[in-house]
Amino acid sequence: MSKRSLRYVNSYVFIIPSLVLTLVLGIYPILWAFRFMFYDYPGFGVPKFIGLDNFTRVLNDDQFWSSVYNTFLYAAGKIVITIPLSLILAVILNQAIKGRQLLRAIYFMPTIISASVMSVVFGIVFNSYNGILNQYLMKLGIISNPIEWLGPNYAMITVIIIAIWGAVGNYMLLFIAGLQNISDDLYEAASIDGANTVQKFWFITVPMLGPILQMIMMLVITVSLKGYENIMVLTEGGPFGKTEVMFLYVYKLFFPVSTTNANVQQIGYGSAVGFVTAIIVGIITLIYFGLSRRLNKTY
Image (cartoon, rainbow, N blue to C red; front, side, top):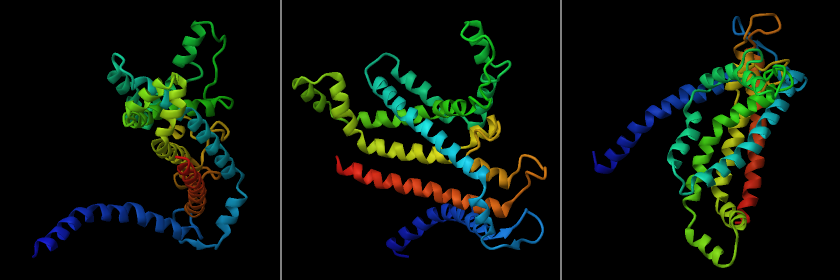
């Protein structure tokens, strides 16, 4: 074999394992689910073809549309707080302060912790009756009665706080990488022109971070819209569906948490709901890409 042919063979040898895994674990499940969107299939027996009935049911499913609303609420809360907080921490820890490497590691630590483990720990912290947080707040005299952090009034706020805690460190490091690519000459020139710290931040730091900010926004949006692991462990979508998000609803249709008549495995309907959910996420992504292109024109 020629050296050129051998090079191509070596390339395909490395590509084939990933390609096989993608086909088996990615493409095949999608095609499998796509087939059952048009069937009434509870996971056993012979699938019954019902055409577009599953999609008609989705359009009239109040529980699903409630999960869509909860997803956008969850994503908005996470995005609005996570990005500014990550940027502020990045600016602070990009300075020549003592122990900054240790602080960066501490803030990044939640990123490498399993979502399930993290949720179990926070379940202990936010427990309504003997949780650590309520105990400290009562000892300090801030509250007189335990707060139901995972109750109807505060459950969504609680899961958003936990999601922010787990995400800030990751995006902080990305912002730090962006800050380190900004030339010090720009800040020196601004100082000569009489610019103060706030003006340097708004007119140099923020515009120069434009590309990295777009990438982080894309990551936060997609992760927030798809996230459900910590909610599943903490509340299972409760109480009363207050924290049930789209992908958790889809998960419950495929893997019901109980075997009651009201909560049985529905693979056919779950496939249809998953397809509609993917469309919703895709539309949001396309809208962001459109806005991102307009933002590029300003730089």
